[in-house]
Amino acid sequence: MQLSREDLLLAYRRMRRIRDFEDRVHIEFAAGEMPGFVHLYAGEEASAVGVCMNLTDEDMISSTHRGHGHCLAKDTDVNGMMLELYGRKDGICGGKGGSMHIADLSKGMMGANGIVGGGPPLICGAALTAKTLGTGNVAVAFTGDGGSNQGTTFEAMNFAAVLKLPVIFVFENNGYAETTASHWSVACKDIVNRAQAFGMPGISVEGTDFFAVWDAAREAVARARAGGGPTLMEVKVPRFYGHFEGDAETYRAEGEVAALKRDHDCLKIFRRRVVEAGLLSDADLDLVDAEVGDEIEASVMLAKSSPMPGPEDLLTDVYVRY
Image: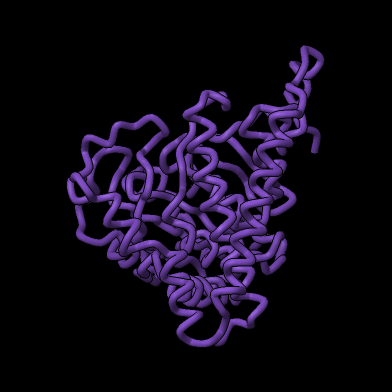
């Protein structure tokens, strides 16, 4: 299936927005402008956007502690996100969630999660709701290679397979569980091989290739919507920053990150492929670059000039009414 020109521009814009957002957060956090703790997603853009472009606002996703990219791929408002990371009153979670607990239910983004492997059991609830009510919606759990080893993840996969829930378990394997290389922490060579144990289809995909991710996700989403049950996707992606901001990354080889940025940058790969195929021009993509650059700059200026929550906000949002 061929993506339209509009879809290609949307895919590039969302990936560029994630990259610029993360690069700017890297700078602002290092300058001491942001409170809390930050984990960046840069390098993995094609995974989030390739999956989420197959979803609607009614389809739910759960994220990891590296959740900014998943939010932006689900089209969460960039200003609301920047305000949130700055801890401002008008942030998308009132400045109370910050980087690690950001959420946007209006877009089907159930939240970033500080618990490794916390997303898969959470998303099974959304999938069970969709199946029970017959909505036709699907649910996607983004998890890392470290989260793939958690008992909660195995339990969720078994539960989804037994009940044939409309779930996709996306394991973004960036080669490190925090600071431990996955060949030390994951017993099998490829996470995708675990799908067989739970009786569900497994797909391994190169995560720097937006088109490969989009195609694999399209097939898995269609199967879930049609009642075919869960799918496991292993998406192999590079990680351009450390586990957390401030990480000295002494566990990585000298020159490793530079080589990843040079040879495995999903934005460069996307640009080369669409330009060579005559689908978009460099000028088209340069315009997107400029517009997103202005958008991110404006979001930072807005966040810096916006008020912090006051004492009157301390006791709001404590309880939720259903």
